[in-house]
Image 1: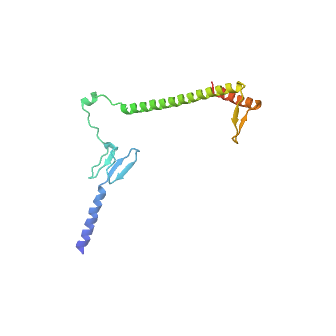
Image 2: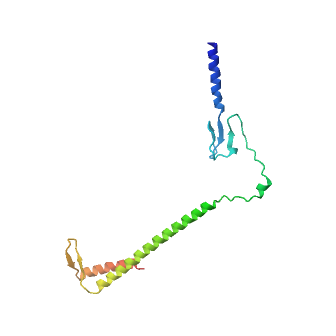
Image 3: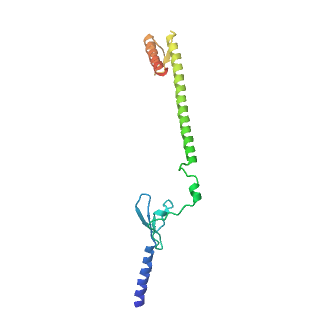
Length: 161
């Protein structure tokens, strides 16, 4: 029985050693994180405070840079490929807006031309017939012709600028 108790205590101590296999780091938000898994790859090594095996890091020592690294060109932090893609996307958007504007202008010019043609037909004095809601053909009298002529003139005033 004594051996059994000793074995249980030893097993309990052995299992508690797993708690020492903890990682400790400071995440990008600035808070401390404790985990049994390693930090994500975007966490720099200087932010890892504790690794399994008891190695404790208070501050990461900055390694000395060789003289050739000092003379190397500095990276500006701007991704040229990304900037080029952004410029192409902006150009495509501008071309799309211009095409839409041109399409609207062409439709407006066509509406204007049709309205002027229609106005000329109403002003010519010829008889004009139209189909009413019952499907019957009716000839416009002078009052209806003047009303339709005024409506067409309003369209011309709005679209033909």
